[in-house]
Amino acid sequence: MNLGITGRVLPAFYERLRDELTFPLSWERSVAHDFPAWRAEARAVVGESLLQPTGSRPRALRPRALRPRDRRGA
Image 1 (cartoon, rainbow, N blue to C red):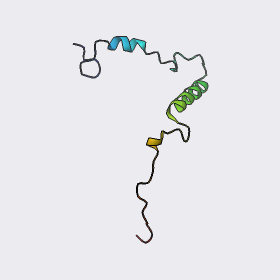
Image 2 (tube, helix red, strand yellow):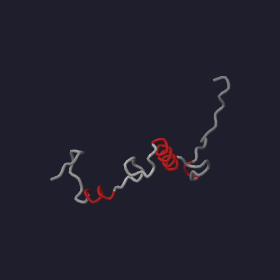
Image 3 (cartoon, rainbow, N blue to C red):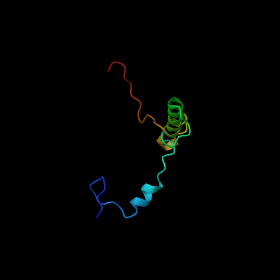
């Protein structure tokens, strides 16, 4: 039984999944040997992954007011 680093039983195929990870933006694999250039490239990729263009949210996830309230004098 392999408990790995989690302390729990891992699936039988975890070694295959681990070996498939390549981490293409890691410092060791980078073709850029200039650290500031590597950092800028990695940050740009992370930014593309995390940020969505404005208005790209599906309609069901857009915020909306359920009941407007009059907050004057409250």
